[in-house]
Image 1 (cartoon, helix red, strand yellow):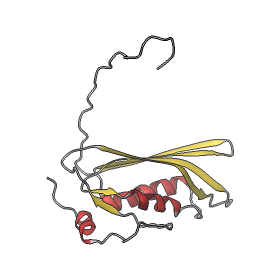
Image 2 (spheres, helix red, strand yellow):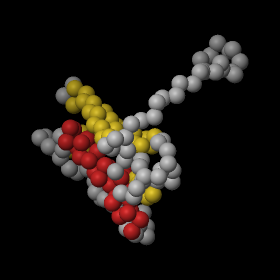
Image 3 (cartoon, one colour):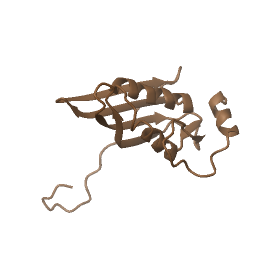
Image 4 (cartoon, helix red, strand yellow):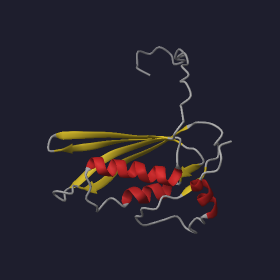
Length: 161
């Protein structure tokens, strides 16, 4: 088992709030990874991210996907929701906010791997997609396992499955 990181020690000593957060906040709450002995993918989808364009003040909208392989800590979902909500009235360039969110997740959880994909909706006729990654020093993913596909058990009705 991996040695306990400062982030993991802090998570165990930090009391959780008595009630789930209900207001926008930059604080990400964490909990101990229930299976730190293995690599497994955690994926978060935030299809309704909103912030403001720092130049025009107009709203910018994005779909965020966060893929992470936790080490000792995982993110509590309600706090992640409130964290995303905290950007609603802030001006931020797409590149800056995407990288800041990755930095904050890494700071809170010290994951083995994290990737954020931000798909920004059209602005001025241009879509912007930003991908930012973090890899824990020395971490290497396990090789992929390719499984054979099985034939469909559905009756041949001419309809696509």
